Length: 349
Image 1 (cartoon, rainbow, N blue to C red):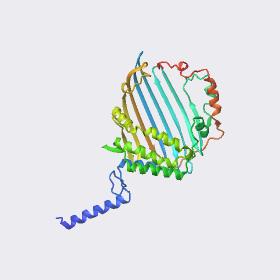
Image 2 (spheres, rainbow, N blue to C red):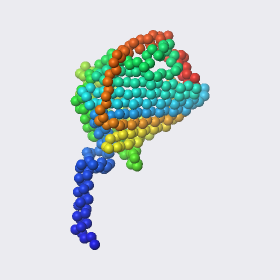
Image 3 (tube, helix red, strand yellow):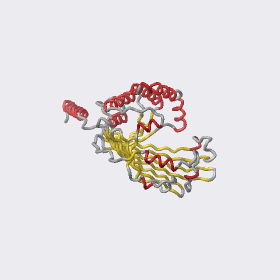
Image 4 (cartoon, rainbow, N blue to C red):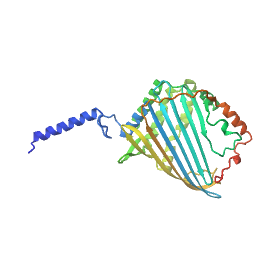
C-alpha cells in the first residue's frame, strides 16, 4: 500500500519534471507560467512579428448579390497576394505575386502580377491581363517585362514627402515600440478555445486607447519638416475616433476572427462577415443600388519563419514611365467620370 511519503515523492518528481519541461520550452502550452504577461494570441503575435523573415499568403474573397434599380446582379471578386519577406539584412527585401479575378454575369476578368523589393528598388512585372482592356494599346508590348518603379518619384507625384529608408536597427526599435504599446493596451480577448484554433475578438475600449498611444509613439520617427503635418493629421483623425469606433461596433457587432497557432507562431488568421448593404448605402449610389448582401472573407497564412530567401533584382528592368506615358496617351480621350468605354456585359456602372 502506498504511504504518504511515496505519494509526496511522486508529486515532487512530477512537479519538478513539469518545471524542467516548461523552462526548457520543450513543450509550449497555451498556459505557461514562464511566459511573459499576455494571452497566447498576444504572445504568438509578438513572436511572429519578431521573425526575421516569413512567407505570407493573403486571400480575400467577396461575393455580392445586389438589388439594383434595373434588376438584381451578382458579382464575385477574389484577390490573392503571396509574398516572401525578409528583414534579415540591413534593407528589407521581398518578392511575390498578386492574382486578381472578377466574375460577373456574362464576363470574367483576371490578372497576374509579380513584384520584387530589393535595395530600395521596387520592380513590377505584368504576366496576364483581362482580355477586355479598352485602353487602345497593345498589351503584348509590356506583358512579361520587368518595370522599375521609382518610389521617390512616385511619392513626389502623389504630393507625399520622400521617406527615408529605415535601417534594420530602426525597424527593430519601432517593432519594440508597437509591442510595448500592445502590452500596455491588450487588444485581443479569447472568446473560445477550439480544438485547433482560438476564437478572438478585438476589445473595443482597448482599441480606443491603443491607436492614440501608438500614433504618439511614432512621432519620434517622423522627420522634423513633416512633424507639423503629421500632428495635424493625427489630431484630425483622433478628434472623434472614439465615436467612430462606437459607430463601427454598433453597425458591425465588432471584430471577431479565428486564430491558429503552431510552435508559438501565429500561422493563420480567418475572418468572415455578412454585410447588409442597406445599412451602408449613401445617397450617391442609391439611384443605382437599392440594397443587397455582401459576403466578405479574408484569410492570412504565415509560414517559413526565419528562412533565408534568395531575392535578386531583375536585370535590365525598364523604367515604369515607359509604360505609363503610352498608357496615359491612349486614355487621353476618356473624360473623368466617363466609364462608357469600360462597359462589361452583366456589370452596369
